[in-house]
Length: 236
Image 1 (cartoon, one colour):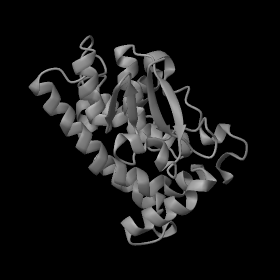
Image 2: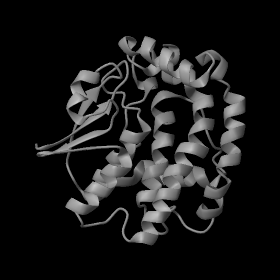
Image 3: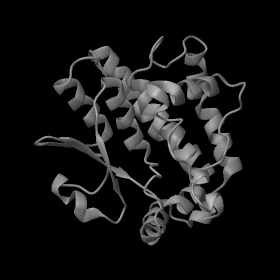
Image 4: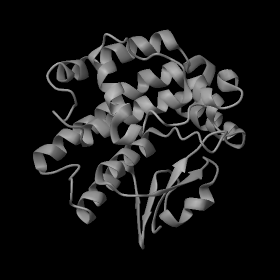
């Protein structure tokens, strides 16, 4: 197979929890494109040095290497125009909004809710790196940042725009899922793989959307291996 993607893994290679990598998995499935997902750890910088940077996802498609989840969306539309992800200027502007909405409004609340679960999920060889890099960015310890009650409150407020849209349509894109949905679902898959936390109630329109997204593309998200599936579960 000529197409492969370096994909963040945890303490078990089956644990794939990067929200950015999940975006691309949904985009590839949307296009009907096969891909070999290569397990990668935070400290495996040498393995992706050829890409000129140090983060995943890294998509290698034949002789072409593409980094950054959103740039991969754009690349896939250029090279594989069937079933477009972004479409025209208006559709891409909408997708850009949801990209930033997921990263800047949803992710902070989710992070505060599941941070120590993520720490338990990362590979043992990555834990020093994860702790050091995150604590430097946060300006406080992981334990101080981990606050599920505060995180869920933040997330509840941040979900209001999604609730409004999902009262109108089954997906953020309308009657069928598209780029906006894929850009957002990555945050929820991050939590699903690493944590048992319930982010939304089953009466919330976001909950129904979330389960539609899990079942999409042959159960792509629902079939993902979770930390609870691994021996030791959430105990770390």
